[in-house]
Image 1: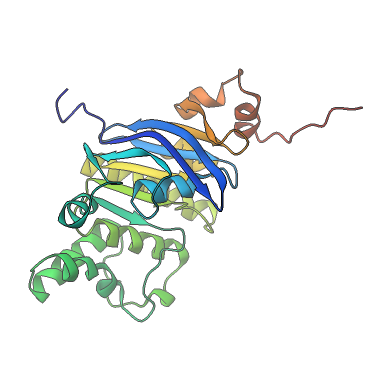
Image 2: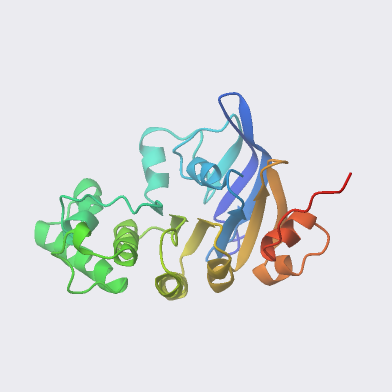
Length: 257
């Protein structure tokens, strides 16, 4: 299997607990190079927990997480840094530094991990802001921007080291429908234009249909993946009652005694 067809992420038999409570139980899946994979599920099902394990913020109780063939769980020192350099991450809040301009926020990674001159770092950071539609806002402070613009700036910062994989945690959270749709289009454009792999955590169904090549669905009660497929395939799923209710926004019904 060559590099173009080998999965860029492989999660094998991942089990994760929190305070002795099992959150994810023996979860396995792959992410293909260049695809947009959405991790979907209801509140508390372990979506963000799974993402944090894949990017190395949490260590699983058991299992392996391979990033382009390298196990991020067992890697240490320079090898772990090498793996982390292949990924970019944005969190739900954007996590921009409020005391810095957008340009300063975006170039942080360049200052930390490259030997670029200040002028070169500014140029690269400005190019990334342009890529997400924020040309002309380089000297603005985060507080001066709308929520959607801050999300775009966070994506620009995640892109600054040219990662192979971009992880987005609830990118549409707190956005109005129009701004959310614009952000969805940006994600699609970046994925296609840069040929990047995206892993996105969300529970926003319109965004799922707009961006996802494939979806894995987690379910809180079983702590596992209960469905995998395109959004269209899962929407038409008639075998799993929970998947059907989720995609068609149907409340759970109680049986009469």
